[in-house]
Amino acid sequence: MTSADRIHTALRHRTVLAAAIATIGLAGAINGRADADPVGLQVVDRNTGQTLRTWGHHGRLFVAGEPGARYSLRVTNHTDGRVLLVMSVDGVNILTGETASYDQRGYVLDAYASYDASGWRKSNTEVAAFAFAPLPRSYAARTGRPGDVGVIGMAVFRERTPAPVPVPVAPAIPPSVEEGSRRAFSLFSGGAASLRAMSAPLAAPPPPSLAAPADSSVGAAIASRREEKLGTAHGAREWSVVNTTTFDRATPYPQSLQRIEYDTYANLVASGAIPPSAHAQRRPRPFPLNPDGAGFAPDPHPEPWDEP
Image (cartoon, rainbow, N blue to C red; front, side, top):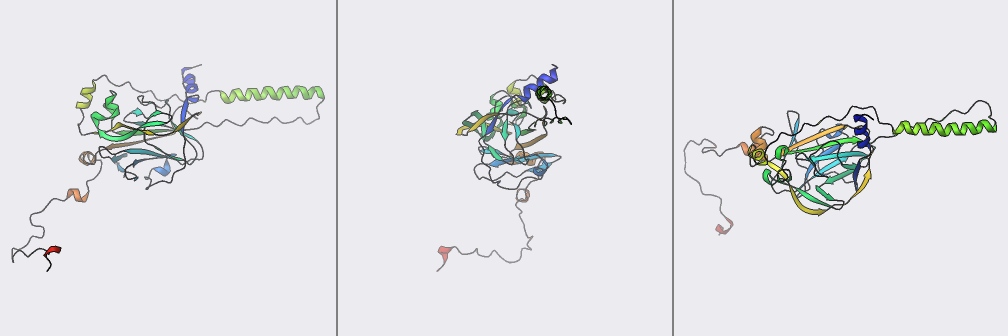
């Protein structure tokens, strides 16, 4: 068995988590890319229930978060089959806590279903809530991996469907009893051969190799970025139930990749990722109407208690 075959076989039999999902009505508008992707991804403010606005800039997507605000990742399957979602926050797999890679575990989503992933998975019944926080307090930085703080990722895999077993054509002449016995054995053998063919690895390129991170101290990595940079904390424990299932990936590489970058609103404006609001651009003016100086200052509107 070649190295590529071993990788593919391992991926096909990987155990994954299936969320105990009830289909949820979507709140807010899905961004313009949602229809083109097999699975939609949105960031939801859990305090308000509203979807965070997404800005596009040079082919990249951005959302603005507030320190301390809890959020969830809303995923919606737009296809008629199950999909596997390997999801990461700040370069960390949200289920396993590993530095994220395509070949790791993820959530299995039923056809046309929606689910809100609200935290780092701690068990089949509990998560640690996602909450925006300064970079040094992020889960990634606290576990020695601050280099990819500020990005949400999702790799989507379709499920492999077995090819139909061909039905043998009956002979044109009525067979004898002995011939019928031989045919029955032949059909059985042919079925076994077909099953072996179905279980053989698919001819597909191996997953892309991942470059090893450069050696650097955690302190130096944090110091090289702005202290006010936003990350995702390991928040309070919450009840969240999932079940375990298996998933046979159609290919060892994802059919869709999505990423959403995030930071504070001020940082995103300063970096040019999003335009400042009209209110943020306006400065107080000493002479708003450029008066000519004629006349005198009028009295203000009376307060209610000034009325006779």
